[in-house]
Image 1: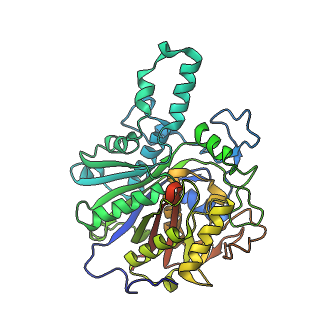
Image 2 (image 1 turned 90 degrees about the vertical axis):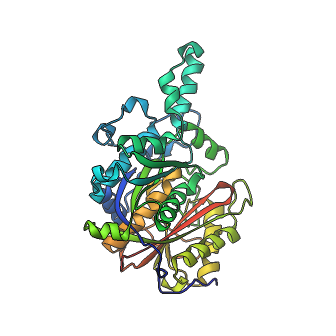
Image 3 (image 1 turned 90 degrees about the horizontal axis):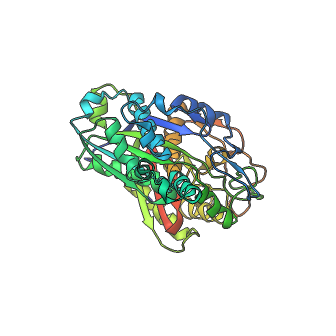
Length: 414
């Protein structure tokens, strides 16, 4: 069992960072209140895919965002110039800022970090652009459509929409752990004193390219995602965005902000063990680094929000890495992807928001679609029904192809 650092978190003298606002676009709900209700209810976002043609594929379910009107949240930019993932990112960022009660006139001339993680960038729009050229020929070249496909727009468009004149905008492309990477980037920037406010998270839109890639790997489930279940058959691709307002504690207290949770620490590792297969040692090392950075010991952690994709190798490897750090009796470990599907670069950002809401509202979301735990996983995944819980420290895992691992530790604000 690995051991953490001193148990008196946070370490003395370090600037503290809290979550004061969240913006959510997901297949199970839009906005913080609806997302929290959906998590507590164990709602499923699974439905037949409509955003691209699934002819030729045996399995056709996914987790799409429905009921989202970009015009409700995007007020200063021309929506037609934004790719779908960028639209998600911008809308979630505005939602988060409004949820935090942050006055934009204050932010416009302050240094602000915008960090948005992604797996696919604007692959959805790129797919459509390629299909259009194949169908109509290069003479139908659309310069507006070409401008939409730059992944950097996921972050720069947020700064433009909110008129953040001194923003540093960064798009973090570390695949399925990118949301946690972005949160860690914001945490570092606030700790170091570079900024007092950071808008961090992740966004992705479902696209045919990624669905086909996972399908060819044999990891698309036929109808539902069953993390940690002995009969699990793979992932369901999803989409959405999650953006958190991270704020230096003093700034939040001075303006009387509501505080969802504190970001206690994070850890990163890149083991480069294999292009797609996870590595137990790399995941365990990342967890240990995050706990040490947070200044907590394993016995203090109440809940783990797992990467929990529902594939056979991921769930076994992640469970074994957790047990390597926590021993024979790890904290309860849930998989939100059983409800949300795998929203790629948004996944760990939505996971972090789920953790913050769980701390705030005092409950543990369930792992749905669960019938019988795989003995190789050997964790309590809180099957099918949420439970009330007094949560003080929660760990949020993000793992990605190539061994890009990122873990964020959140705590109740003390």
